[in-house]
Amino acid sequence: MSKKKVVIGMSGGVDSSVAAWMLKEQGYEVIGLFMKNWEDDDDSEYCSTRQDWIDAASVADVVGVDIEAVNFAAEYKDRVFAEFLREYQAGRTPNPDVLCNAEIKFKAFLDHAMHLGADLIATGHYARVRQNARHGRFELLKAFDHTKDQSYFLHRLNQAQLSKTLFPLGEIPKTEVRKIAEQLQLPNAAKKDSTGICFIGERPFREFLGRYLQHKPGPMKTPDGKVVGEHVGLSFYTLGQRKGIGIGGVKTYQNPDGSSDAWYVARKDIENNTLWVVQGHDHPWLLSSALTADQASWIAGEAPEAGRISAKTRYRQADVPCDVQADGALNFSLGFPDAQWAVTPGQSAVLYDGDVCLGGGIIAGSTF
Image (cartoon, rainbow, N blue to C red; front, side):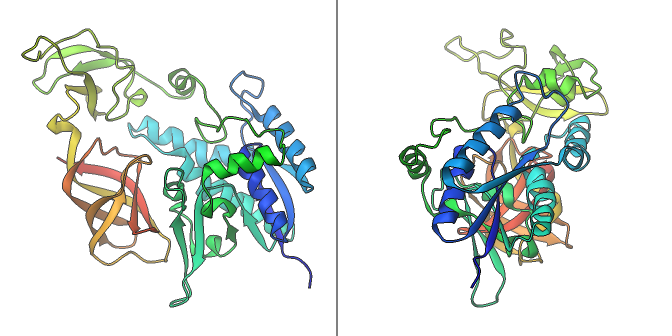
């Protein structure tokens, strides 16, 4: 019987490199695919595509798999980056990784892999897939290593995509991945994990966005209407932001001991081009008891029944209990027994039943 062919996305990072080795050890015919998705400033200090390709090709040589490069820059610009800019221009804070997975890694990449004759695709994400024996549907589960779990970013995947996907790293901790890379003497064993915008990398964010977005300065106000500064453009701020606001020296309200609380971005008024700021991490304007979300995507193909489940409203957050109420296929609302901090329009609200990721949607608004 011929081996099953798996095409794995190889980024040049440690995770996808070890995942490729694991698949080969498991007996699959493995082909690496390196995706180039950004071309606007290829030669800048922030764009690591050239080095990433060298790393990916070097690893493929050590592991003993073929690798090819594919350019999805046009698809990325149309499907991910344009939407990313639209969201920022509208005053929201999008999550490019969520969009990138849905539109590039599990759409353009999946299509390309199938054209290469693949049976399955794989990535270095920390997550798990299983087929539920009871109803036959595929489920997306959190990784065993909850500190690295990336199911939040994968919540828009559907049955067809999950049925073709392997996540080799889902059942091992990140520390073990590093150990394997060192034992195999992979050339990128000590390479740092990538951060920053999906496929664009780390760069001075405000300066980068400023090249693409129109921005107009306006007033920063406190809840009592006092002007305490000027913002550089609403697109450059996100709810809950503390650093880089530019009013650190203003002490409107002092504590009894003479100290003053830090400033936080609390609301954005697009119509009046006003940024509302508050003092103190637990200011009421930063706490939400409920949210509404749209553009919902459900892994099972249908919304969960109304009731108590758990959710994350941002990636690095612990799951919190909530009550879900679906409004049709694309909209839902969540109510929280404990108010949630800095619920941010544009970010994803992702729902869980224990370790099973149910799907989620884009936060449209919240109530205080």
